Picture: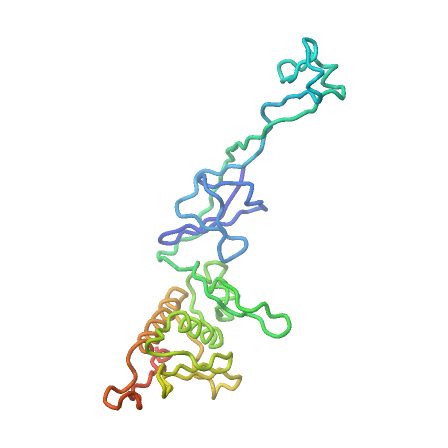
Length: 285
């Protein structure tokens, strides 16, 4: 039998196996086992009831005559399982090749479920972002990662609250460097060149200007080791769901600001409307 520990959220179930399980060899509720943000935890949309192991069995075992010209009444072309005793001496000789087909079958395994908790919320723990999480000569560049694995928790919660309950429920923080990467990437993917374009795109400076001859600056962020020069700040939230909500609101607000007319209609495009984007409200909550 197999025992799992189960954590229920509002719309999904997270579970972990009590002992090692090669997940590619098993199905749960008739479906492939889905990984999640933690290596040893998996996710399923409905309560787990059926656990099966995939096994491959041999079918249609047979011995086929290598040289078809030798075929006659005493030397058949094919010897199957039912006639192998009759032609035992032949199939054990070098005249025949042993062959078979394969078939995958599912064997039911008793599943024991230990329910360890309920989180009455739909936590977006599968949310991913493109982030460069390492720097220097060993950097792999930006890669898609589970955002929940990149946020920071208090020392108290790290010590006292087990995973994944900690990641799903506890207050958390997204560092300003990752926030800078996420927001600037979002702007680059969604900017409307009718209104604006990216002028500076570095890991230390990001600037957006009007897409006209004057190229008036409408957004400029600095990303520096010195806190005094940082435009963005660490982003805090009461839990991961609220952090994702804040992040999505930031993206919506900044792109709405960029993708609109900034050029003054009264001076034939030589001036810019004085409408600067205020980000301080993001960090006042």
